[in-house]
Image 1 (cartoon, rainbow, N blue to C red):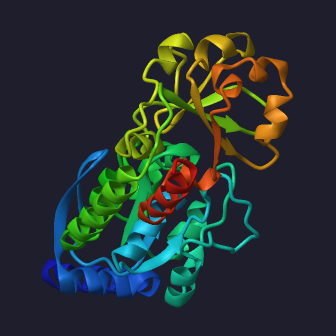
Image 2 (cartoon, rainbow, N blue to C red):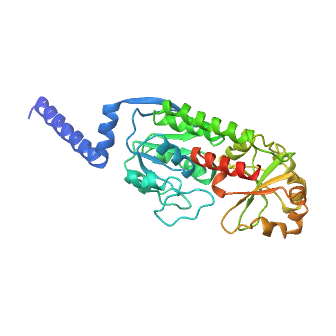
Image 3 (cartoon, helix red, strand yellow):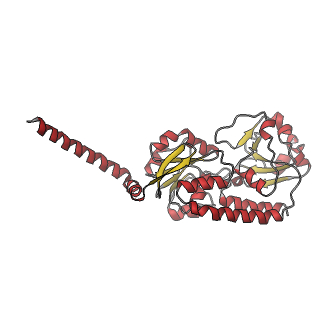
Length: 332
């Protein structure tokens, strides 16, 4: 057998191998590959630098419930979504009420929750784009698993320190190539802020946000976080010295809270206005007032303590609009 014939046979074998490998890949994720080829790709700026994503993603998996609502507002195609929203207790497979109807309409799968990401489930969804980052523990999980996620599909992370929902919305809209819808949503919010602000009679002095949770640990919302930005928008002055008064404790990259020693409560929580976010198992305002250390705080002494739903801590567009209505009722 000549060397030429052997080379030809080897080339044929290699070609067949390539065909087989390609067929396997197509079987595992053909639609996403074909759709990406049809629509092309584009580059977007993310918390991890520039990432190449599909120009028109068809199977988005979003791994932070705080970001999922934006995708439905933007009419993006959501294959799977992490349903976790701080303060909501959901049954397996259940979605938050704010966007449950949208998820059902699209046939969105619920991403299983756990101590770490379920990478096998995510891969089985054959995503052409994964969106993560943003605030809280879900955001931290995607940062931790970023390299593993990029091995599944292009992964775009929203910056964890995005100071308001508008910045989060802009980032998500850029990822899914829907920037034209952003201005209308922001304008609607700004118009409502102006309307609500004009009718508010606000208490004097700075405000802080207390997170009441089952373990009773002292926790305040960090400055320059989405809810703090919303409260500032309507004219409420937020206490910017919380971290300094708490001794500048370390925070996780996606953390939007400040924890401190109970001995520092009177020092750190000295704002004359206090909002309370009650999580599952946390004490309500009446129970907090029974705690001698809390009862002596200026906000309790001046009867300027107000409840906000836990879902308001990381408001998206829909929750922001609902929170404005609540504030309008409090400060008539």
